Length: 329
Image 1 (cartoon, rainbow, N blue to C red):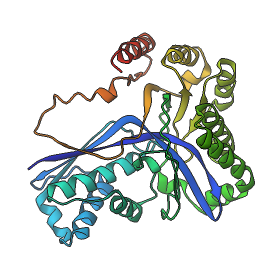
Image 2 (cartoon, helix red, strand yellow):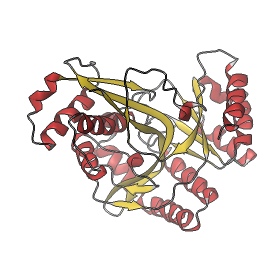
Image 3 (cartoon, rainbow, N blue to C red):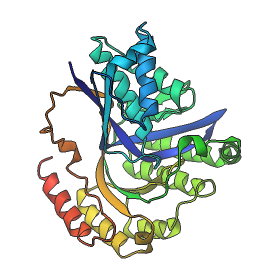
Image 4 (spheres, rainbow, N blue to C red):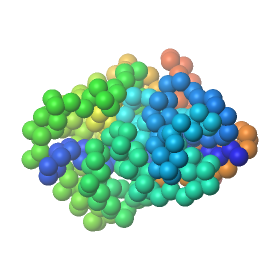
């Protein structure tokens, strides 16, 4: 038997900060995935230690010895860069839990998967089917909105990496804590967006949270990006609060070309070496049977187009791709 499970990543967080007695965040998924395959054997790809731990913890969850992992092959095909703030670890871990459970002929709930994720590391709220305020360290606070807003996001990805473990420290906790009064206003803005189902207010809340984060983990050329956002009246800008990526949120597909042109002509080009276009995604963990069929060209990736190095053809190709993809939506 060979099974594959997938989980979307994120483009940073919409909001993140100190609320109540701890840090909390709201993430949104994008159509960019980690695919984990479990099969009989003993092969393991080095570098995926958290996924391996998830495999072992899932075995223990079902009252099996973790040493049984020696008889299980684990492979990961991920579209998510590591240590950029795109929830690559959360996606790997969650998809592993689901794939292992299916391989064993067991069922596993999202609640059980979340518990395993939290036992390994801080976790994003991409596993929920709607926007969810989540305490990423222990998961005690889970405020589900019941709202899954659709929008497009142009992801700006630099070469710089930031690991979750390296970022979170007493110092960063102190900085988030110092901003608690300001972040409460951000949260209330987010709550109003949820209540009114307003993507405009959601974008505004994301911008406010991103501005606060500039004092904790500043993003290069952020002020220039804000000027462009205000000039073109894009929906919003959100950042990876503990990573390096930035998302430019727009409401309509027609705005994508304007965003790409503005990026190409700006100083942002100097830092953000990859640009990709995606949609918000709330599908969570999905189990799919894989029989060695590489023909599963996932339609959810249709919006993705990466710029490589200094290849100036990326803009025309990305815009053309986005126009073609929309016709199939």
